[in-house]
Image (cartoon, rainbow, N blue to C red; front, side, top):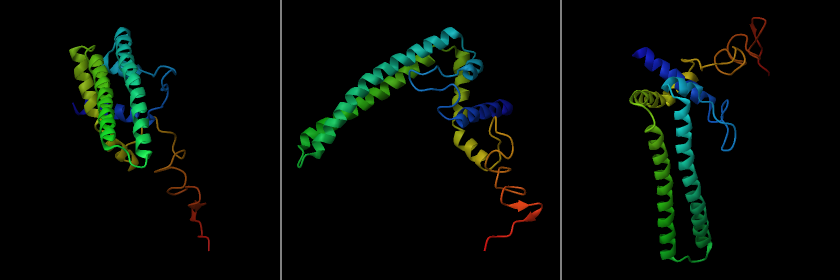
Length: 187
């Protein structure tokens, strides 16, 4: 069990270490994201991936339509506030409309996620729950990597990154020592 949690923690660390635009990840309209790891971890079929992506696209289409309305209402609110003495009732009405649109966006995203999760088998849902639990460890994993307690997955060779063993730190680091003697400070 501990091995499984450690594996999941390291897998999550690898995902988060790459950042949102890591290898194979592009914005909307760009190349499809790499899904090899999640496909293997959850044992997803190609058919499930297509269905999940369709559910997410449907949700994002709805979000996009509502977002357009949200931008229009937000602009109207800014314009109204820019007037010398705006109408309080109009401000209140626009604020409520903006809040309702934000709720619609949140609801659409949650519905898309629920639709995607409903495409999984019971075993896949259990693995997803373990992955979600491991994702909550992200801050601790990043802090442990920052302290040098964990090595980031696929870390560059020693001396090519900052931190312990990187350039500028420790014995032999650039500017720290020369030929076994500490460099004299500039005076």
